[in-house]
Image (cartoon, rainbow, N blue to C red; front, side, top):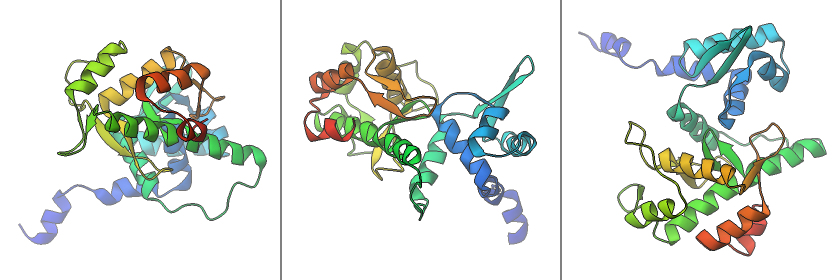
Length: 240
């Protein structure tokens, strides 16, 4: 086998990169980081493209393995294929250059600020809120970074005290570091990050802002973060 044949048998990284090299397809993937399933028409309106154009792009993303689809009656729903795909998109976003032009309208600027403050990254918390929670958990000895990110025994006990039970062991790690694209610092992902995010919604600590993946910290959330993680003062102000 010559070197040319060996290259042909390796992973086709260029094909994956080509899927995200188109602005519309990249926009779709970023929107789907909210963890929900979207219809083709919803994504078309979000990206400002024709329905037929959206369908063509979605077919490529599904065929390339970045998205998965399901049908209910006449409707076709798509979502990111799995948590690994979501974390790949978020990490690429953190490495991408910032857009040169700031939002030109007040609503667009408000949406941008809301996403930076707090948002969902597929099924876990991101933005300033997600980073603040991760750093507070580290400071309290609930997370350990010495040999790669791990959940300590104190962290497991802390989650149990909140009534959060981690799912049985799967190929998904209990904790994973996900580089935040707005903060450029890590936030907590993995099974524990997803479980904590679900608990925050169920307990009323956070609420969605409209139909975007931005979330707002509620008064109950402010008190919970103070009581459970000691987040007070400037940190709470920055994420509200």
